[in-house]
Structures are given as structure tokens and as C-alpha cells.
Image (cartoon, rainbow, N blue to C red; front, side):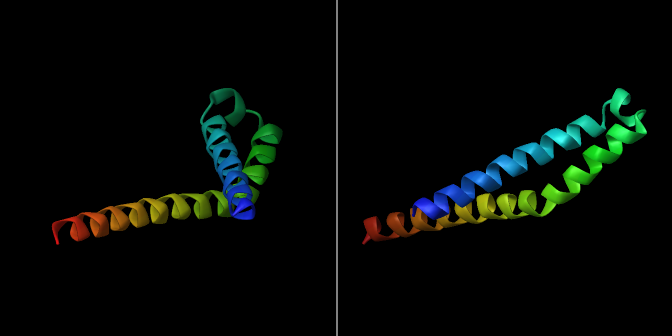
Length: 78
């Protein structure tokens, strides 16, 4: 389980960095600096897949938790 936690944490870090870079791109001083915006876009592109995977992981984890909660409620009724 340690490996799964380490992978999840790495995906979380990359997702946060992706969001940070996305926010930077909307700043006028970054948008007006072609070299800086190119560097940010390049790094952001490298992180995009990890951010997508993390969002999917979070969504599936929430669905699983909800399903488990529903199962527990169902067994309590019996």
C-alpha cells in the first residue's frame, strides 16, 4: 500500500503544479513574455496527463466511498 500512496501523492503534486501553471498563464505579465509563457506551456503539457489521472483517481475514489456507504446502509436495514 505504500507504493500506491506514494504514486497518489506524486500525482497530487503534479496536478497541483499543473493548476499553478494554468493560473500563471492567465497573468498579463506572463502572457506578454513569449519566452516565459513558452516554458510554462511546455512544463504544463508534460504535467497534463498526470493531472488528468489524478482527477480520475479522485472521482473514482469518491464513487467507491459512496458505493461502500450505500452497501453499509443496506446491510444495516436487514
